[in-house]
Length: 213
Image (cartoon, rainbow, N blue to C red):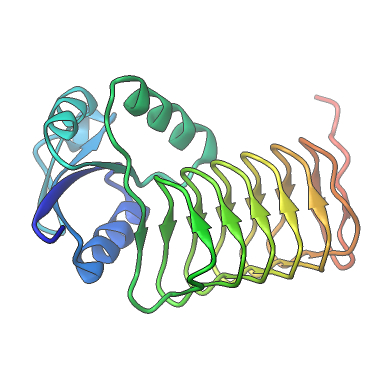
């Protein structure tokens, strides 16, 4: 597949790392970047021209596909859904320094960053970010549009719902379940199941109560 072109959606710092991953992996070439911010149109990021999302979607449909390089889970999910609805193929990318088990299953749209580890029989959903040096152990199930931030450690048999943010350096102990849309704060140690849409922080992690506005 060397030489096939993809469009990267996003033109921020996360996109820079994704472009490096694509180039280092070598399966695709980046034709251009697409971003919703009109102020970025015409700029160059790592040697790639930035265009608006409409042009990016049109170009992606004509080429090998696309990948969404936006850290925000909700925005990434929205753009990925629009691309799929338009018939654009999303690809997955793993940096050569990442260690990914041959028995792991990685869905389209996912990016695995430098130094990350995905161990045996783990299932990674669509449009997931496994960020720099994050570790996901055996038999985990990671839902769609999850962001596993740098240095996070997910122990064996963990279940993570869609749209979850696992903060930098957090640790999730074996067999834990985390519900859809939950947030785990940076550095948290998760020892119990986390309900959907809740935020947990601390060691051991506890629910953060919402303040009344």
